Length: 202
Image (cartoon, rainbow, N blue to C red; front, side, top):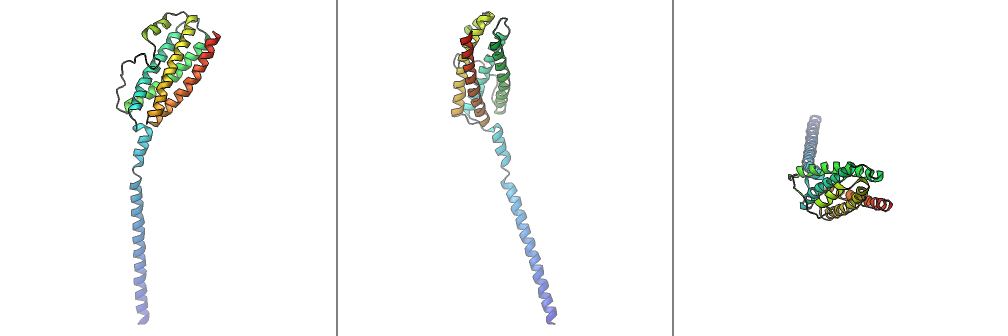
């Protein structure tokens, strides 16, 4: 009789342990589910990193730099259509086009992603932008004269772009836009040095 009683109690104890184990496992499963829900904010974090975070400075930078780059490409096209241009100046104009064309596409995509109008009209003479008269002077110059004029104008143009990019570095919020601004400062500072050296040789 005692043996049966002991066996009975042992069975109850074993059952209790099994139930307790199931209860613990269920608890950890729930914790795992809760943990999964706790990390559900990661997609929004990824969205922010991919460009959802921006402020007015980012929008202004993208809008104005698109137009600024477009004029640099127009200046380069004007020069490249001429005969007799110094070959080093031709190479520089081609590099400017190759670099700034894709940057325009990138910034226009940002503006679209941010819900901004990409048809922005024109800029004034600020930011190193060439006036209509200055653009006409480049258009009318012969190849030799255009070589020097292009360099002089593009130095001013680059200096304006550097100022705009620095304002973005100081005030922008979107990390990709700030990174592009830093690249513009570095690239165009180097190109200004190159153009100054070319001018001294012409």
